[in-house]
Length: 307
Picture: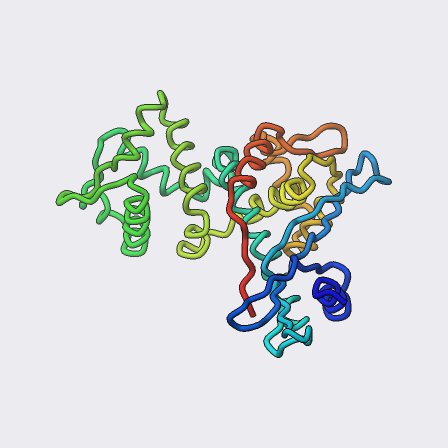
């Protein structure tokens, strides 16, 4: 029996039907046959307009482990175990979830910045941006005029903006940074300019807002957006979903959230054109989705963490 056939039999016996292996290669130094484990992981997405149809696509996973056979075709002890292969598969899918979310945030940041929630949450940023727009500087005495607790928060925001090249520390206080000046040249009014600043912050530092500043109110917006667009990215087409399908997907992915809250978030996302709504169906913005697909194709392969 050929080594290829031995590898195929070993895969079926130990890993199941979803896993396959590349063509074995012989390593002369270790006198070992090596075959890398891989999987074309199926993802089925439904469309509520055509309930009997399932959109089936596959995510190609590579480097899930290795089969190692000796010259006698017997498996070696350091061949990847079934448990390690499953752990690597789970690791990959978790990384895909995070990567898809990053794609969606990057493309949707302009829309998310326009939501009432984002404008309210980042009001302190808006206040600082307005001051720099009008005067070009925030003096130390301006910062010190706040209560000690508020002063501490204002300084943290100014340092945060400095890290984005939006502000710059001076002896007198803070002035605007290079990116601030570049963005200001593109906008005629303060409202559009502040929205552009918020969009840049969400796009580049969403995780910092959540982890460092404890701002979690934007999460439902990102999560609802991701609940729709991640399956769409997997299917590579825009399905039509009812609100019940979106709530079900949200619960499966992120845990339970009151339906009234999800309905409000959907209304906001539709209002800023992050999603579309027609009759009883929600569906994606084709222009945004095209940008998401482009980003997906440009990203490098994800390798799961080895157990």
